[in-house]
Length: 387
Ligand SMILES: Cc1cc2nc3c(=O)[nH]c(=O)nc-3n(C[C@H](O)[C@H](O)[C@H](O)COP(=O)(O)OP(=O)(O)OC[C@H]3O[C@@H](n4cnc5c(N)ncnc54)[C@H](O)[C@@H]3O)c2cc1C
Image 1 (tube, rainbow, N blue to C red):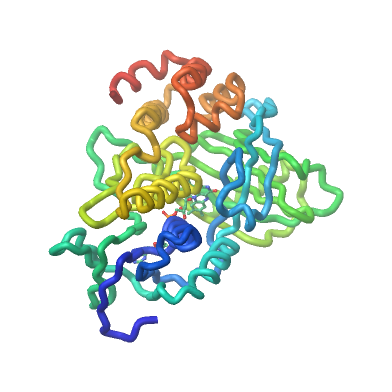
Image 2 (spheres, helix red, strand yellow):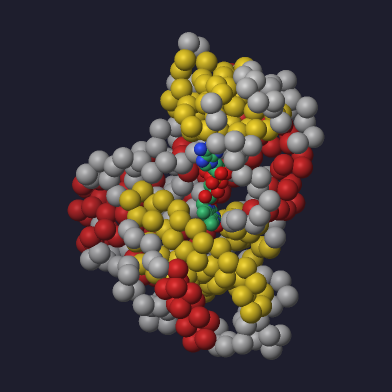
């Protein structure tokens, strides 16, 4: 901890110390790239609660394999009409990390490093380029650095042709009686067996350990709901589709993730925006955790090659940003409803191709296969207008 009023120059400052900052600091230290640098992490939260559950699909072992809470190789999607689609994920697995395990794992290691200072405070302002350095102001003190990695997300000011949906959800971890009928090895990636009156809405069901299940009610809309509306929907879904009425709620998670085609700025003077603030959240799905790891890899590679964090290739390619913009426009004009679109996608294209598409690693031929699995008449004009 820093004594009050002291301002020092650092090689690197992290404004915000969540998923992106801790991934970068941890992987930068582990790889030795930050070994001779002085680091400051400014974050108001002590990170002692399990505030998020991060899930993502992956083919290979990832950088946080040791702290995976669970992994699944079997996945299903249910259409709004009740039809079950068993996915073909190929060698992809769906993986889950609890944020508390991630915070403990990264912070236990980072707090042992003598070149890292932690400041529990809130950043009020960042100057991206002040006479050859960047400055973060926190609680009346300015902290300067050669580079600031910023992950403080602010809702952007949108142009009239830009879309902004909120992916909002409430999840409950429930304890089921031992004689339940839920397949412990298969997740419901998107289960649309619910009313679509508010917009695209689905359940996400992850069987955990010891008859515990995470059931999350998720919507892609422009307004969030009243808290009781999520709980009522979850209760009805559990009774109707998981066929359980006797259960205990152990934990609750509420979240909002931006789904937008706003072009977030990665580099701004000596500031590098990372995480959702740097555009690592996929506009069409809200998935972020894997993109954060790709951005971290690109930053570390750039440091290795040039001594600077600047990299050229966008984490989400321009082509995939264009697809996201198109999809958000289709959602916006609502002629092809979200539930129909995602059900068509998973019915007609194998999940491993969809995952590559959503990861932004698909080829043009795979993209075409994905596009033709959807009702193209709804896509043509939004696509042309997005170019
Ligand atoms: C509940 C929830 C569940 C999610 N689940 C998934 C998932 O399953 N899969 C997936 O891919 N993505 C998921 N996401 C999206 C995304 O992965 C997370 O939001 C992720 O935490 C983004 O990382 P980040 O570093 O950009 O933001 P954060 O992890 O939120 O880190 C930003 C940090 O900045 C700090 N901060 C804010 N204001 C200030 C300030 N003024 N000064 C200093 N610090 C400040 C915050 O306290 C926070 O710690 C989820 C998001 C939420 C909210």
